[in-house]
Amino acid sequence: MRQFAIHLSEASAADVIDQSDWYASQSDTVLVQRWELAVSTTLLRITEFPTAGARCHFKAADLRGVRRIAVDGFPRLLVFYRVDKTSVLILRVLHGARDLESLF
Image (cartoon, rainbow, N blue to C red; front, side, top):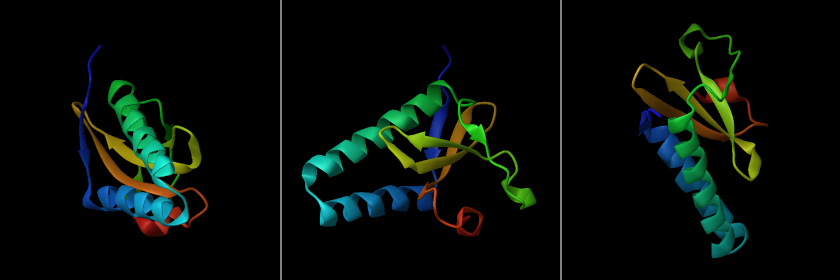
């Protein structure tokens, strides 16, 4: 099975760190570790099955082709990414209840 290279945008890396910090302030290290493992597992799944995520239907032309998939165990947190022939670019990791298109 072919595995795609994965690249994180600065915004997506900041999203993961911000969420880790938020969980740390709201709970304990157990939840933070669960979050970090869940994100890692989800990203690995994307590299193995890049078309598994649902296509997004954003209005902006430059967001066509973006896909989304829920973080394992955190269904309201979504990974947004774009796939090309050999790699996956992680664009954002955001809560699904936000005004998503405006955050790109």
